[in-house]
Length: 493
Image (tube, rainbow, N blue to C red; front, side):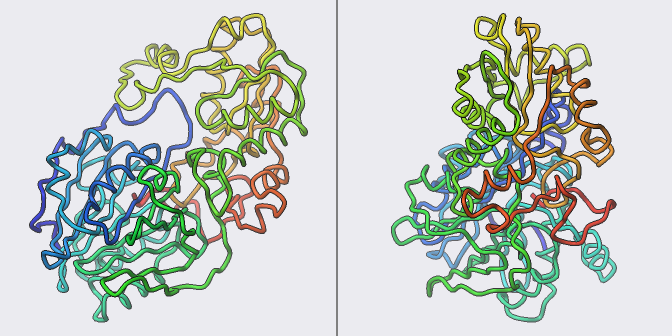
């Protein structure tokens, strides 16, 4: 297999584009995952993918790529990948080179596999039956074992991304493409949403637990697929349904065929999608993210009311919950914290002193709003504790007389193995400190987390999140697949 196929040029900016600048040293928030977007049967597949990926930009800012297949030219592949934001990678001229009526696209945040161009997706290969492109959101837990097995039998890997494993499994099979893909999907364990394209087919697959979100839409006679439904609104597509766990969708010139490669063992959509990752205007499993976060804030107010003068949320993911908390308590909601959106990806922190000052470049307290006030600060999670401490101190420096922290999730105690970049267990402050100890560490006047049951009820509404199926392993250590502490907490993306 090789990357050397006729294609649009690959944008080269160096293997270590993000060394020292891509990681956010100031905050210890959980890292966004990746986003995938696919189109089948539209003459402007590349243009739709560009706008779709732009809507998914929050899921990955390190690299972006689009691969198209042109049915008018024997399914010829054209692709373009680069390091940076979607708008930085693609120009009008570059998009015009990506002719075709089907495409898969990707935005990446790497958590394992170096931040370099060779790992940017979609990954492109040539094998005996033609060309193959793969884009993934998630993580293959058993990829290291499969990779070692394949290398021992002669496979030569071109990247350090575990997404490449599935391409090798497909290429080594003597069976037809769809059967080979099914068997490859049956071998891998983890949380993933795959878009796999050949010269004449597009395959769409979700892991047997539905850990990573993936939705299907329609735009006229064409099909579109996205990690989040917000991208459908951007391109004017109509949401059809979520891709079900263990489902395999096969699209070719004969239309759409729906099969299964695995049964649903235990539905377990990632809880952090509802809490933090997904955009507020997205829906997952029929649940609107903004509404769910508002209910989290309302439930948090019921469980942990604090008499105060104002409520404020840490932008952006906690704003909806802060509004819910304010509505439930009757305490005014105020914009006490402002986020500067233009420093995150390229701001360099050459020293600890500048890193500490840098927090004020990324987040500012509005002095005229918080000065002399008792503030309830709503946030979505506490990971290491450093972020919360810095924000609490920002509010105090701006004149807040009291800062009470309320978190719209249960304590984050366990690492994720399904595509979220989390620290090791020993670095998760809630895994080894009591709530009172965490309160002291972050310099808050009080601290409370949403209960497990309160979170479940808030997300699922009347039905409850367990009925809908969620992975809460980061809170309760109940992983839906076998994992061990040595497993890669990495992202296939």
